[in-house]
Length: 512
Ligand code: D5M
Ligand code: FE
Ligand code: ZN
Image (cartoon, rainbow, N blue to C red):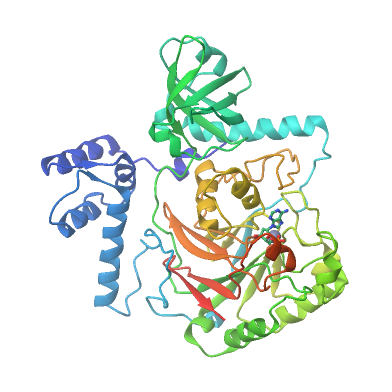
């Protein structure tokens, strides 16, 4: 069962607190955005951040947004850190957007070598794949996707009393229902029509071009809720869309010490555009006595660790090492050259020597044997605990499908797609695009548990940000532009390494 109360703690005095909050801002002639209310109610003392925000403003806005509150909290945290430079930062962290990562960390660094590794793989397909790709497998897979996501949606207040589609169709009043998107199309007047299905029936919903829903991203095969009214032709005029989402922003639950994790991906060892010198610089820096380098306890490698063989037509022309074992042997040497205090967790990507269909299992034993014991291999995706901090690592192939089906998404802004994944609570919602999906008995691409850190690679870009308390990381590449990427106009942002402080969730990007 989905442990609702673990993710969305409700305070026993929640109702009274909610009234108090609303009355408090009401007296000051302003309103609280519902998301801000939810965030505040999840805090130890909801009044503290609110008072902080109100105190920071001379003239109050009409509506106080979640962003306003988070910014005030972040400012207060920074001010506190400034006043007490050696005091550990409070666990508020990564709440404010950090697209422009600061150059250095707040807080004191620990020596990683003083801490033994603490890695637990919490969720991963490796060794548990059962599917054979039969029709029954697909039916079971989609049923699992639908049931799991609709269970999440049912716990949303907006969808209280949601009906089955067969019932909703016959309604003449306001309806609420949950469906899997079977089709999205535009009408000639710029409206959008969604076809939605559940186990009972199918229905069409209209998103009007001049409504706030016009800007909502909707993709095939995601599961969402609709609130609307049915017109006399059986079409639902949607008033709102409800995503499973992360309904309540949570503070970052970090470690007590400032140990850090670094993130790389898309190393593409074996490619003739692999950035040898940049990697050598990285290796030297990691072993140096730089304070941040010494504080790195973990290195998470999110796939495309080698360039592979026969991944795309005429790839042999772009290879410096044309043997798959040769490529992994070379990578193993590079990993062995990293300092002992760094434990590596490695997942595969679409260039690696495992099945391309997601979820992908960990690299096979004959390849794992090439590496020393400082490496831990996991599947793609995996939920891994590093010193208790939950990291969801996913290579990110589905971003190709996000980019091709959503206007405005692009390869330079992977964070936008990552936020959509969290809202949809699914890493690869679009079925039948470029991302091959294996119909396992359970949908491993569902984001069941909210992670503390969510990392992807694949698009050869770099970025850090946060969404509702989850730190988002996209981890660059160690390969310069290939002829294929040149043809597709993909400019890599290479040799940049995001590093996250596991105590505070603060992220910086180190460039080589
Ligand atoms: O992906 C490297 C980059 O190339 C990344 O931005 C995605 C893009 N890419 C890769 N394969 C495709 C396809 N089939 N269509 C469109 N774009 C693609 P890598 O996985 O390293 O090859
Ligand atoms: Fe790649
Ligand atoms: Zn890739």
